[in-house]
Each structure stands twice: as structure tokens, then as C-alpha cells.
Amino acid sequence: DADVTQTPRNRITKTGKRIMLECSQTKGHDRMYWYRQDPGLGLRLIYYSFDVKDINKGEISDGYSVSRQAQAKFSLSLESAIPNQTALYFCATSDEFETSGYTFGSGTRLTVV
Amino acid sequence: EDQVTQSPEALRLQEGESSSLNCSYTVSGLRGLFWYRQDPGKGPEFLFTLYSAGEEKEKERLKATLTKKESFLHITAPKPEDSATYLCAVQGPGANSKLTFGKGITLSVRP
Image (cartoon, rainbow over all chains, first blue to last red; front, side):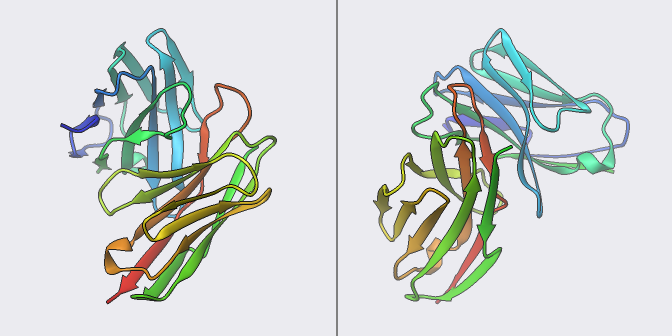
């Protein structure tokens, strides 16, 4: 099994719909992150959480919300999807020392039509 | 604000043709510089962490080096399976600082 599992892998949704992307990890790490990746823009941080009771906005949090249900689970929601939220979304986890960097999931490709 | 610039954007090599990928960075106090490999449709995969100028790390055909302003990922005698996008990221000072990523370099190695 993968260390970081993201579901769904692919999703097409309509403008205005609410959608949730889910992430679970088996590394036992406290820190989890949500990034989006767009061609030519690289990886940009949406939200991050350093433990179950800690939630922080990243550089592009507008239009998104998150929930940390447990140490292993971190979900990203789009309350009302819009076409410019079409992107590849990645969840990642790390320990507090981050000497081995972040461990990423395989991503969710989201298309908003 | 931390900044990472990677160059070139894309690089095409013949199998066996060695080259280097560049990562220039600006950060108030470098805590760590990270290199990742990303294959199409997959998440980034961790390669190296470098902490101080002069440090070098190697893995198979890859060697990463670090100066006070930039890092290089040297690829020696590349093979087609080295084709991927290579991402560089920096982490500023403080235990709670996050990674700032560059846009990546897409490497294609022709047989």
C-alpha cells in the first residue's frame, strides 16, 4: 500500500458543485499538506496542518477549506467549484524534522466544467 | 519571501550525454534545499536534502551540490529512464517553515 493515498484519482465536476478530495497516510507523521500544481506555475501550498488541532492557510487558500479528521486523514473541500480550480492536487506528509522531505500522494486530477 | 528559480525549463539529452540542472534560490536563512523527481501523472519523489554550502550527495547517476546561492543536479551518463521533471525546493529558517518549490525542469533523454 502507498504511504499516502489520495481519492479520487480523477474527477470531473460542474461549476458550483461542492467537492471533497480525501487523503490518508500511513507514515504516522503529524504534518500534512495540500498543494495544487498547474502547468508553468509549479506547486503552490493551499493549506497545511502540523497536528490534529492545527490548521493553517497557505498562499492560495481562497475558495478552499480543509478538515483534519485524524492524524492520518486530511481532506480538502471546494465549496463551490469554479473552472480555474482545474488542476492537479497533491497531498503530502512529513515528520517534524523533515530530513527526508515530504512524502507525496499520487495526486487527484480535478476538472471543473 | 523565499524564491526558487530553476533553469532551463526543459532539457533534451542524448543517452550518455552528461549535463547539469540549475536551481537558484533566495531565502533569508536556508534550513534545507530539497530535490525531487516527478514522473508524469505521479507525485514528486524525494531525492536529496542539502543543508550547507559545499555539501554534496549522490544517488546512482545523480549528484546534487550546494552553494550559498544555487544548487546543481548533475546527471552523469543519463539513460532514458532518467526522463522526468526535477523539482527543487527550499526551506527557510524556523521549525515551522514550509517548502517553496521551483517550477521544475523537464528532462528528456533520447536513446
